[in-house]
Length: 232
View 1 (tube, one colour):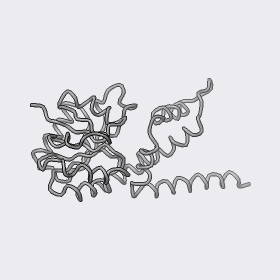
View 2 (cartoon, helix red, strand yellow; view 1 turned 180 degrees about the horizontal axis):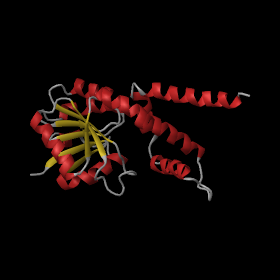
View 3 (tube, one colour; view 1 turned 90 degrees about the vertical axis):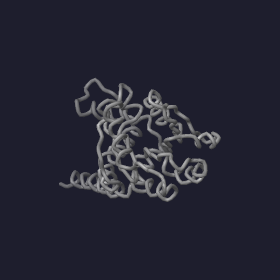
View 4 (cartoon, helix red, strand yellow; view 1 turned 60 degrees about the vertical axis):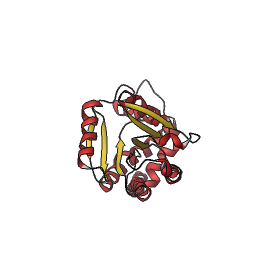
């Protein structure tokens, strides 16, 4: 029998996730107006909501989530969201994940793309089964980290990239006949991130405790470059 999988937050990424999980389970989309009773029979509950909305969603659905249901999150930050899930579901099996791809970067397939796993309280056998499924069925590249390790790396890998990408998007850089390979990469970055929501960007920058430090360092270096250029 296929497992019932509730995807809480059926936005762009929730629908993208459902597309890849549907062959392996019965998908139950959970939107704001969905009757929470639908969650009661689910074996797995995946939270795919912004960090700002996670606490209230947990409070609303907590009475309807079965004790044996596994709790999974897919937020792009791990320390703070996982603390919220532990507070609301202390007796449940909890797994933090971060698929480091989305509808745009995964539009031609997700095989080989990276996903981070931060195991909070999944039993060894259940955790091993999840890793096997991700590797063998979805063919993802699994990376195991602690929530703190994840957030430190993501402050650089994702925080800095999205900061530059957001600036390029606002500049609205154009393709030119004379473009170079490095300029092509800027255009590709603009294309990759152009459909990302402000909520996702804000989560990456505000929720990750390490992101502000990286952002401030980047801003400092830009200002220093300006000062160096002004030197006679």
